[in-house]
Image 1 (tube, rainbow, N blue to C red):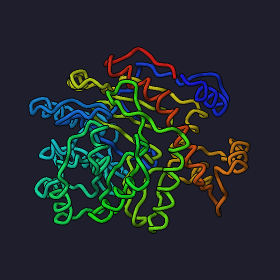
Image 2 (image 1 turned 45 degrees about the vertical axis):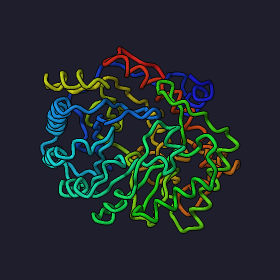
Image 3 (image 1 turned 135 degrees about the vertical axis):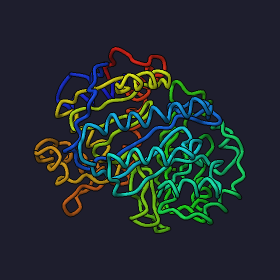
Length: 417
């Protein structure tokens, strides 16, 4: 565990107690009164395994994929049965993996969701560039998908090679995007790769917006301990300069920065499965965040299916939050949107933000990380860089350790972070 993240956790939670994950869990999730609830579904199948990707995934096989979807639908009904009435939720996102590999079953999954939930802000899905064809997009749109996110990573062969990605002919992808319209078309890119300059990133940004995208995400390269990536990390000074230059360029072009890593052509064209106060996760490795707990499902597809067959939720680890721990989790992911709203904080926790973290907010303003704007706090460019910087520590200190363990054990006894 990084000394920096440990010290920060102790200071902000006002406690020496770590985040304690155990193998006990609730087989019925109480979410009926939960506000701003989102949904996430994980589809772990890929045609090829990319070297850089840390997520739970396996090579696609028809039989296993269909068995998995059957179990996934049963999990949805197990969770949904806890509420007699259909629950209004903000959004539904399919991640992976390559969810389009089961495009013919997406409608089945959405139908199960709609028996228990009312989705108000649309349904999004992640796509591999090779999955973007006219026929597949039509199938997804007919199933109810309104937003797509395409994992481009880079349009340039040299960086695809670094990431272990095969070369792609984007001509057919661009044609498909013209033929089948969606509310939001987002394209994902990775920055801070070896020898990557602003001009090369700019080329990717321009190509995206000129060929159908109305939203982009530019994520920093993170070297997880359990991936096979041979890429060398960019040093902090170069990374900050690159991030600031990207941000300035997008502002000059009139794009709206709607989170730390994302830019959109308009305020309404958003794609984010991360910036939600609470969410239910379905599928292997999917996480659930509620007011008083965070849980994560097993990474093992076999163990996942066996649990569901027994009418038990496939929860692997659960943490029961202290109030301060939940506040920090809330603020960390709220800050991802570049805005911290004291009114929303008070609505969620029943106490004033400034009474809990007034000193920290004052310090953040003194160091130029935040500025007060009307009735909320807005992150500055400097603040955005240091969020990037700290998020990297958080990822390697917390997520890397958790996922490393869960890739080895389907149901670990406990984990302290």
